[in-house]
Image (cartoon, rainbow, N blue to C red; front, side, top):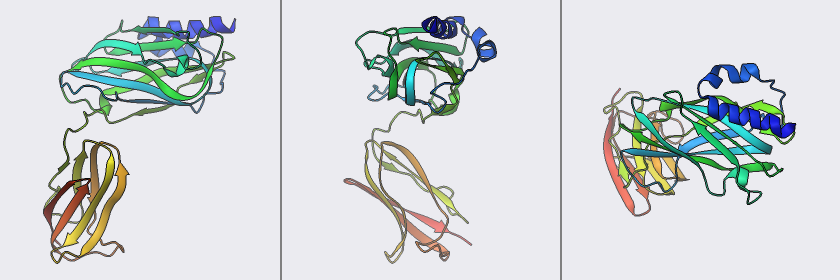
Length: 269
């Protein structure tokens, strides 16, 4: 009986498309199980080939307890994206405890909505974190996280209890940069603050420091190990002690591995 309930939830979600989006949680008894704090994350697929015409994203989940199945509806802009494929990641979270494949279903019966569902059929459940699904879209523009959102997500535990998927993160979906870069601060001149953007093609230690024209260190904006990606930091015109500095020209210098670059900026009061 428990497996029939799980099957009904997952298959119903994946095969009903948008019809489930308004009715699923209303028609279900949300009994509350072990996965109220489970976290779902959508991010750009690792090591995906850089192609301006395609976007590959991965869905993963963390903080699961005795998870048996899941389902959700992913909404996207049809003017910018065309759905191509949904497939489970090899060695995904649900299949990690056995060699038996899960029951996996996807549906795009309604434009702009991709319904995904999967369940374990080996009589077991999983706890922990791992990847679930890889999704491929054709795209006509630069992907941004605001282009996607999830509704009507449910999680089913080993006992057949149902939780609503509440903790969702959609990461930055821009393609990773293929080179280091330090941009001109914006605005410039500035008062009272300005933003400095930079990019990293690979993970590493990054140091970004503000200097005056005498070469004296004024403020360390970053001195951390960061993942590859795009970053922006703000400088409010104060030194390391929080004191406001005088009007004038300042230098900012970035070092990441062998990459070193610097720019000038002007603070006006």
